Amino acid sequence: MTETIRGNSILPAHREAITLETADGLSLVGELALPQDSAPVATMVCLHPLPTHGGMMDSHLFRKAAYRLPALAGIAVLRFNTRGTSSIQGTSEGIFNNAEEEKYDVAAAIEYAEFADLPNIWLVGWSFGTDLALMHGLDPAVAGLILLSPPLRYSGPEHLVAWAESRKPVTALVPELDDYMRPAEARERFAAIPQAEVIAVDGAKHLWVGDSERVLDEVTRRLAPGVAVPLPTTWDGPMGKADSSAYADRTVATFKDRPR
Image 1 (spheres, rainbow, N blue to C red):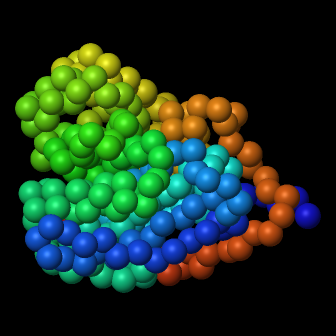
Image 2 (image 1 turned 60 degrees about the horizontal axis):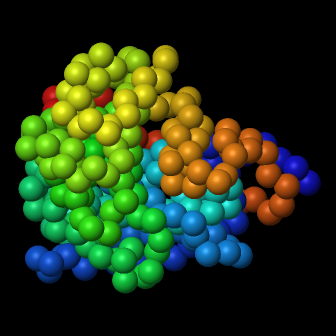
Image 3 (image 1 turned 120 degrees about the horizontal axis):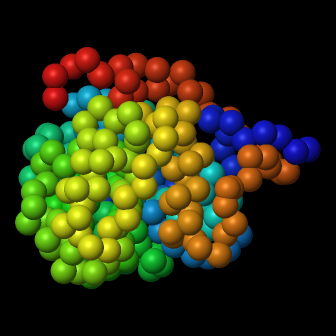
C-alpha cells in the first residue's frame, strides 16, 4: 500500500549500531544506515549541532536522512555523537571541547567510512557541525562539504583559505531567517572559497523545521546526481514509524533562549 512519507517514517535499510574509536582513546556512539539491496552510491557523514544546546546524532534532519536516504537515494548515512554528547542511541565518552579536541571525532568518522570501503564520502555539517567540518574535515578521503546553517563561529579565515586551496566542492545552505548568519553575510564571507556555492532558502530558519525535504533534496543533488529530485513523498512498501516523543526534550529548539 502506498503511504505518505512523514517525519517519523522509517524506510527499509540495513542499520547497524557502530562505535568510533578516536586517536585520543575515546569511544563514540554511532549508527551506519546502508541501502538494503544495493551498494551505496555515496556516503553522508553527519556532524551535528551544538551539543550544549541539544545537538546530537538524532537531531531531526539527520534522523530523517538516516530514515530516508538509503532507500530513496542509495546514500549511506553515518551519524554519531561527538564526545560527551548523549541521545537515545547512547552517550559518547569524553567531554565537549569547544570544537578543538572534536578534531579526533571527525577523524574517527572519516577513518571508519574509509575502512568500511564506503564510497564518495561527503561531510554534512549542521550549525556547530559546519565548524567541525571546516576546521577538521579537510581529509584526502573527503569529496566535499555541505554546510547547513553555518555560523562560522569557531572556524576562522584560515580554514576557509584551506578549503579554497583544496578546490573541493563546498555548498552552504543558508536560511533566509537564520539566527546567526543570513544569506547576504554568508555570500560575503564564503567569497573566500571561490568554488563555494551559497544557496539562500527563502522562509527557512536555523533549525530547518518544515524544510527538511529541501535539505534532503539538496544533499541528494550533490551526493547522488543520478537520482531525480525532489525525492518521492510517498512509499509503496514496508515502512516503520519512529517514536518522535522520545526527542521532545532534546530538540535544538528547547535550548534556543540559552546563551551560546
